[in-house]
Image (tube, rainbow, N blue to C red):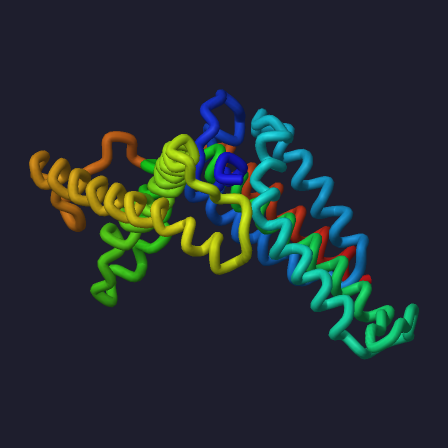
Length: 266
């Protein structure tokens, strides 16, 4: 299960999507995620599916690798579907059994919510697969630049978000190593009731927290040793400059959103 979590990982490959400006990928991903909540029928999601599949094909990231990130949210997905399916009482009754009732509105809401959740994970994961943590930091900082006028520490916020995102795969890898080490020492992490499983997690959580704090301390010391100072006056090794392909990507995304919203609300 730990290995199935792919959020925060970068997949190094040369593709048109990888070469786009990080600001373009952040904004286009945001527009795509917003569009998922504007559809009222299945046709909008068909357009969104075509757009998502096309972008995945352009990114050259293996589809199996992207779908693998859905495994950790299967339980959340099932709970969301069940709650929407049985707790929505409006609309025509399709099936009634004991105290459970499935209505037309409940079925539609459950299906749409499941699609939204899946596409949210796929869309946001695709952005991290095609963008390095450093590029994400620069992109977020540039997009938040107007907030500097109200004395908001934009650079520090972008750096914290980037470090947090970068630490996700590192901590997952560390958790996997600790779990294997505990299992090799005879720890039983699979059997037992909920309380027993919770107690079995203590030998994993304690060294994980110690390792996380140690990594954070080492990172802070390394930044101080290199005289790191953020904020005003700091230059970039690779300044972000919009190119023709970036404007084309913006245009394609806006065109998709317009078509999808119109078709999804007919």
